[in-house]
Amino acid sequence: MTEAVLELPDSLRSELKEPLGTVTTDAEELLASVGSPLVAVGDIVTYHLLEAGRVPDVALVDERTERSAVDPEISEAIGGFDREVGVENPAATLTAGLLKALRDAIGSAGEATTLLDVDGEEDLATLAVVVAVPAGASVVYGQPGEGMVHVAVDPGVRARARDLLSRMDGDTARALALLGVG
Image (cartoon, rainbow, N blue to C red; front, side, top):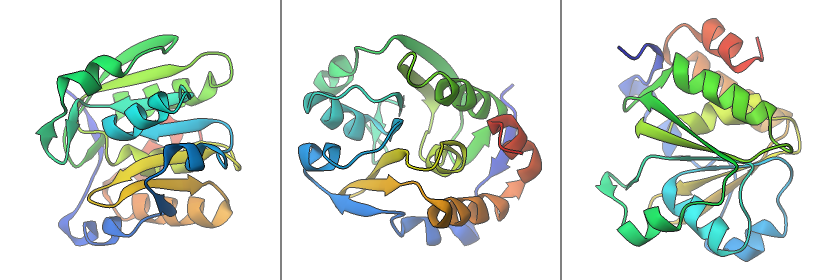
């Protein structure tokens, strides 16, 4: 059984609709301003970055977009990573397995690229990634109906993500420890 460390309460759902960074639809323009490491959350975002010529250091995909299966040509185009790791993460949760896999993938960024293939849902991982990556890193995720959100990680956005994680149901201290940020 997959162990959920944090679960999203209904009371936070509306806050998560507010982008953590700049929204764009142009992958090449976005790539001109990304920091390192680059983490992509979502199939469509990962696809667009790959099509623009950049393999993210870490990417999380679940073969779904806006609750529907992604087109087969998108799934088939997602590749070129040094390693691929499967992990379970049910909707509206962050599991111990996902958090550990993120820690390991972020820790090896620069040495190897990692694709995390999520069985379930990867959306909330954005918050964990923002907390776990170093300052100056870039996190890119999809904003439904709008485009890609580029989060240039700095202390302010990290504090916002950490605050959102702390208001989720579960064990925030354990989640942070699993990410290696205590």
